[in-house]
Amino acid sequence: MVLTRLGHVKSVGYEYFSHYGVEQVAHRIIWEAVNGRQIPEGLTINHWDGVKDNNRPDNLDLATDSEQIIHSWWLGSYEGKRLGENSPRAKLTNAQVAEIREFVRTHPYHGVRADLARKYGITPSSLNKIVRGETYK
Image (cartoon, rainbow, N blue to C red; front, top):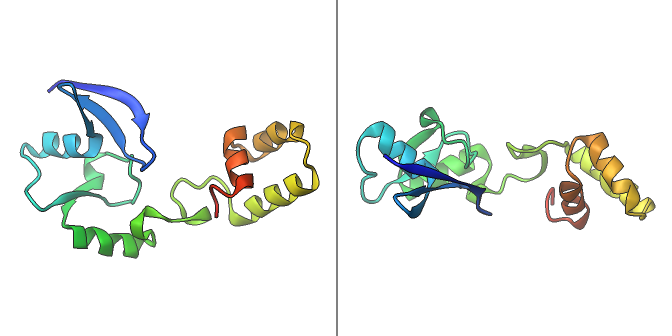
């Protein structure tokens, strides 16, 4: 099998590979390679931990669309929208996000943002998304 890592995760959170020149989501390729068969009609691949780019074989399993919805409710992430500190990728607590927003509101000079991002261990880009309300809604 020839796989070329495309090196990106699309906005929906899935990692993509090129498989014989065709761009495909990594979890489908990995599941089929490990299990030696194609994904049966009507089934999808479920990420047990809810992290869409965690493509370890032990994290992937077959599921129907209904089972996917039930599983996402069970995780508290229906439609993949675990928000704020409940996200598996969260680096900040909701209290830290409130601190950041309050600090930026009272110190509007952009020069402090890089230092603030460093203090919280996040990138300036992530900090700006927090301030604009694009993340940690």
